[in-house]
Image (tube, rainbow, N blue to C red; front, top):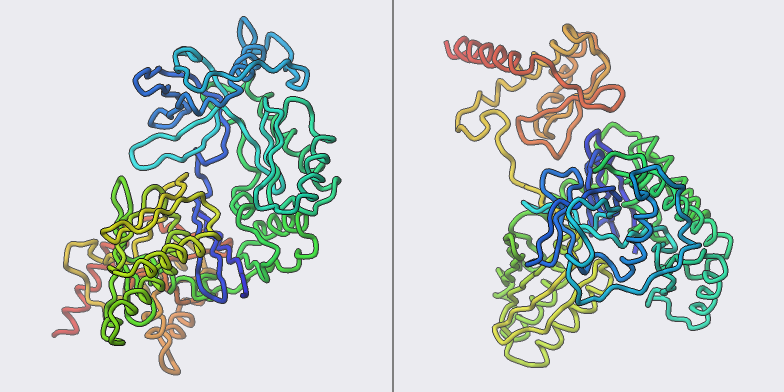
Amino acid sequence: MKSELIVDVQPREVSIALLEDGRLVSLQKESRNLAYAVGDVYVAKVKKLMPGLNAAFVNVGYEKDAFLHYLDLGPHFSSYSAFMKQLLGDDGKGSKSVPDISRMKLLPDIDKHGTITDQLNAGDELMVQIVKEPISSKGPRLTTEISFTGRYMVLIPFGDKISISQKIKTTGEKLRLRHLIESIKPKNFGVIIRTSAEGKSVAELNHELQTLLKCWDDAVAKVRTAPVPSLIFEEESRIVGMLRDIFSPTFEDIHVNDPEIMAQIKKYVSLIAPEKSDIVKLYNKQEPIFDHFSITRQIKSSFGKTVSFKSGAYIIIEHTEALHVIDVNSGNRAKAGTDQESNALDVNIRAADEIARQLRLRDMGGIIVVDFIDMNKVEHRQALYDHMRQIMANDRARHNILPLSKFGLMQITRQRVRPALDIVTTEACPSCYGKGEVQPSLLFTDTLKDKLQYLVNELKVKDFVLYVHPYVDAYLKKGLLSLYRKWRMELGGKFKILPDESLAYLQYRVIGKDRNEIDLKEEKDLDKTSTTKTKQKAKNRAS
């Protein structure tokens, strides 16, 4: 199986697509200026306690107060609390030196059945970490059990335990890693050894451990001087952070359309897999990178309400506030074969494959209820359950699958740390915005020409790319002396017109020489002028 990563860097967001044999199996999108992302560490203040929820609401600067449950304080909260009091000083910030955690005496763990009022007071200042991003109307969810994640390990202050990934099966390797980490880690720091640490040398592990310790020291130093609330730690690069959890040495190619991001990714890959550094390649064509690798087409076919798969069968996906509901339908597949039971099993097995892909692709979390086609035989129901567990084994998110109920429903819970990726595949009319009346599509070329004249003559921008729908691009370039050639000769610019599959029929966008989208000033006035001109031209043509 050929695995490829495609990284699309845009001014406002970054998208990472994972292809297996050219088929889209995972898609991650993240804003480049996103705040309150998972892993960010803040210095914050307790706003109020909620004994009935056994939780506290904490001000981290978000429009909604963040939620901190008693269980998210962590077992080492007594040691953490003593450290914070010593760090902040008895009479305000900066009155004492930064305490050394490795010289502290750890206090006993807190009672897991205790209450929030025993541990916190309104107005307390805390160092907290985001464990769940804001979803819908809810604020972020927090923890005071701070952790710093690397490629090979996770560093947890105030603990002294070493845990090893269960995916490392060899007993000898587990013992080697445990003894190695015990010999290099400081006192009063816990470590979780990740699967990727298997076979790594002491030099590689020690280098990452020192990097994570520096992250802790830098965050602690900022607590004393930073205003409350404020961000005190975030990933050096969100793109590298996204890549860290999905990177695999089996990748054959990583294509990136931005030189700066490509250099970051190449540096990261060189550190963790030096022999694979050559797989990182710069994509410098002007055709959108997702169009070139046929990702845009797959997104539009995979993110709708109805998703078809082999033999005419399809699934319908509905999202609610509390859960996701998936209905399996046989479609035209019901006409194939004469054995209804075997046909139902075949459709259900194929549907399970597509559902497992959709869960990863859309990053659906929480409760998922799947209504499979009814099957009467117990062995068929068990076979479907076993198959779903097998194909979900590759899903990195924590999940739990229950056997089919007597109503033919399968219940799945999947870890949710951020909102599900919901991409609208229907295209809103860019001309009328739902009003129902648009200018004649035949005269859309007049509007484009007005835009080009405005860019070249008014804004004095001559080197840019105008992206349009592929149908419009084909119309503009048809014939030996096409409209495209005429405009270039008339306006004398170096501009190009290229197709972009992500655009609606009468939609366009302009990208400048520096790869930033050009914001057309006086856009509204220009649209009014263009509309007046096209109406007048329509009247002239009609007469």
